[in-house]
Picture 1 (tube, one colour):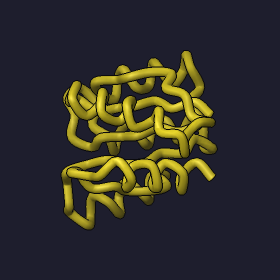
Picture 2: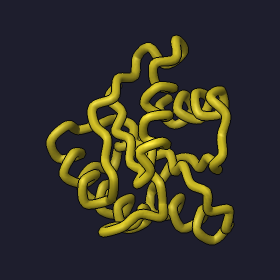
Picture 3: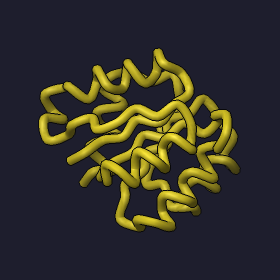
Length: 121
């Protein structure tokens, strides 16, 4: 399965990519790193990921708009929102747009592994 990581923080992108190497995620390979929703849409078009980790607060195109865009072109994509926003309305909005899971920052390695396994199944 192919993973696209979308976050405006280089530190978070790198951390998720490192955690994606976890033995429990051996069927997952990172196919792209995007800094914003616009890059994510372009990388999705080129790489057809199965799973996407999605930040919500980003420049150029935020996560909610990006989720809507990605779901419009591939309704079977599995999106895991990974965000510091703890606002329930935002989480519900992301899920209504098609996200399949929500993980709050900060998160542990095990929490991310579990969440990725859940949305990918």
